Amino acid sequence: MNDTTEAIEQVTSLSDYINKVRKLHSVLESKMNQLHSEKQMNIYYRGQNQDFPNTLPSLIRNENYLTNEDKLINDFITKYPELFGDCQNNFDRLALMQHHQLPTRLLDLTSNPLVALYFAVERSNENTDKDSDKKDGKIFPFTNFPDQVPLYQSLTDDHFENIFSEFTPIRGNNRQFLKSPFSDEIEIESSLARLNGDDRNNVLHQLSQFYKDLSKVDTNDSAYWDNLYADIVNNSEKKRDKGELLISYKTFNKFSSTKRLYHEIKKDIGDFEDQINPLELFVPKIVTPRIIDQRIKNQRGLFMFVPFVYNYGFEENGSQMVLNSDKVQNRTQTRINILRLLSNSGDPQPMTFVIPHCKKASIRSELESVGITESFIYPDPSHIAHEISKTY
Image 1 (cartoon, helix red, strand yellow):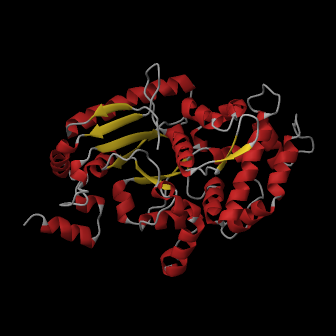
Image 2 (cartoon, rainbow, N blue to C red):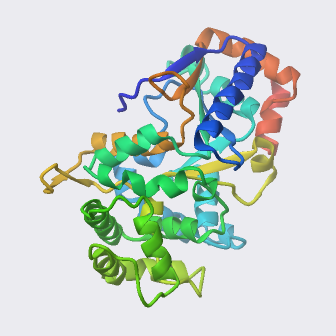
Image 3 (cartoon, helix red, strand yellow):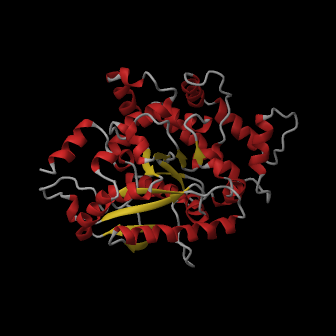
């Protein structure tokens, strides 16, 4: 589904992998110097035991799941309400559903590279024609800082490249990409996932129209929207609006579907202000969940909140076009790649570690020797029992 070229390195042993992970930090240091940022830049990892053509969440790989996102969520809550007694907001609910294998738009990540390696060599469908040991595994490094290349590509998909400079204020600020589960922005997007399909699409349509209107503003000020939004939030009498963008924002904010989104948010945050920064909804976020059980603690688990992609796009002449499932997936993947760790080559490419299928068994043994075992990754009775049974 995705034609992105990757910078691939093979991993043949645990020590080989550790050395390659160490080298990632030189890439990080270079990027930090380019950004002139003193913020902490972290690496996060995603391990997959099969060579899927993308790093999309299962929700987005399946068109029926994506169309019925709200129904998946609400049906699960209806059937198991007792599971959600300790949940404080919609993100907590999404994280718990992801934990129980319901397809969501959350992408599992870990801050522990050894955990990612375990997932990349983990065996599934043993003794079948789908045995994962017959397929190469992959590990994808991510960061909490955006990369310009996929960000620009995401904007050009809908001919919004004129607003690229508007993202300048957030490029060196990881607060826009590293979020707590209690942040207003994460509650906004988690609540958007719960809206019915029509309302969700209406909100996304209004967002696209806002981006289109912003792209028409004739200004060289890279912080134009940033300044105007600050005036809106602070309720300034004289707002720095150079091109009727304030009208576009007010239209979005007063739209009936947007009001229903605010209503959903206020179920969790009663004093939420009816204000959304549209630019923040364009990019992915890394979210550290509350530690809801030992499994998340052991796995050093985090989630990427994958942004919403509207199933209509804009032609160069400004007319709208329907996006088929493949195009929605491709555009979503490009958004995800905004936080992929890219190589330092002249042609920056997303970095990927590949574990040849013939090396998986030996690497599993090496991981066991340093305590990364099935019972460590999955510290529940059934997995512990399975691990014990394998020793006899």
